[in-house]
Structure formats: structure tokens, C-alpha cells
Length: 64
Image (cartoon, one colour):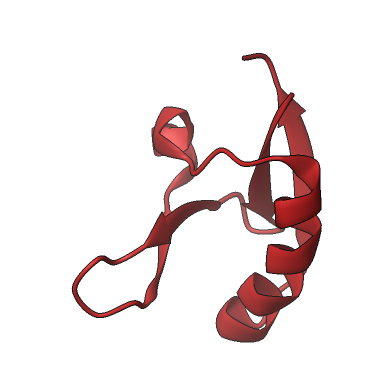
């Protein structure tokens, strides 16, 4: 299964910037570009996103 990380304000985690290594957050209308990962990786990444964005996040299962 594929999972994505959704922020409480509707944005989604888009991955990391390949040049700077910074976290990329996308608007809700670009949800199809969200970074897809397995559940174990999503669980480890959620705390990093929450610290960066200063908001709560959730893990959402999506169809493959």
C-alpha cells in the first residue's frame, strides 16, 4: 500500500528538495504529486514534518 502525509491545514508532503534537502509542502490541489511511501517510513517521517511545519499531520492510505 502507498501512504501520504497530510497536514491539518490541507497541504501534503511532497518530498525533499534535491538541491537543498529542505522539506517540500504542496497545496491540497496538488495532492496527486504527494510523496508516496510505505507505512513504516511514513510513521518515521511524520514527526519531522510536524516539527518543520509546526502543525499536526496524519498518514493517509491511498490506492496504488
